[in-house]
Amino acid sequence: MRKYQYLLFSLLSIAFLASCGKSYKEQQRLNREQQIEAARQDSAALKIATVPTMDCLPLFIAAEDSLFQKAGVDVRLKRYGSQTDGDTLLRSKRAEGIVTDLVKAERLRRQGIALNFVTATNASWQLISNRIARVTELKQLSDKMVAIAPYSATQLLADLAIDSGHPKETVYRIEINDVNIRLKMILNNEIDAALLPEPQATLARLFQNPVLMDSRDKNLRLGVIAFRQKVMDNKDRRQQVKKFLQVYDATVDSINKHGVKHYGKIICKYMGVDMRTVNALPKMTYHHAAAPRQRDVARGARFTP
Image 1: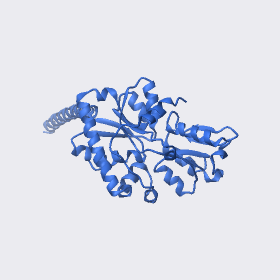
Image 2: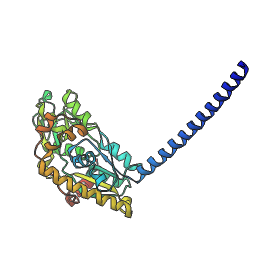
Image 3: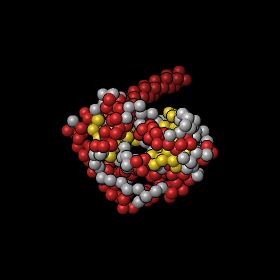
């Protein structure tokens, strides 16, 4: 009797293991199919590289409130701490668009990446000194270290500051790509000065670090959203970009109506600051999608570090 029980148990065990094996193979097949479908959807989506700065706020709001989805366009934001990471994504064709500045964009063009500037942004930068360094004027930058992102608007603005301040000694430009690392270096007394966008500039000011220069005083509008030209040459992609810009304009209207502080939680989430910083932000006006001024494009193109 025990012999038959053992045989029955063995047969049942084999059947169970066989069914498990089949289930595992089936699960593997389903997983592969899901991965293929996810890759297909990602490939078809409009992917845009962003940084944690206020010029990206319309995109962050639209993503957070599912406005792109409601408009029938799959937009996926690739969030990075530096524009350089976005450059890499664009070069490798893993993104269709990028939020950047005209200096970086023109450098990409010189490297053979054809770009279409779909809209200027309200990006601005402030040169902020570390209060411990006791630098309150541009001429006092002699023998000081200034944090910039290389081949970008920050490098152009650093040159303008140095040229106008005429410091007697060399000013050392330290290449720090990540905007939040530049901010931390100011707050931790690790650098003498840094070029910062918003909201990082506001946070630095809250800790009593002086502003030496503001790009808005130079009549420079260097922020831009750009897409690869091949994207704009494709009919389906052009429709995606068209819908993207429609959502962008609607979001801009909402920001201008309610003010940036209305979107404080989104600013905190996507830019890594707190509500104290949000409440201290200056008044900002956003504009509907429009090509950058030719004078700004030319300025970015002329700058060759």
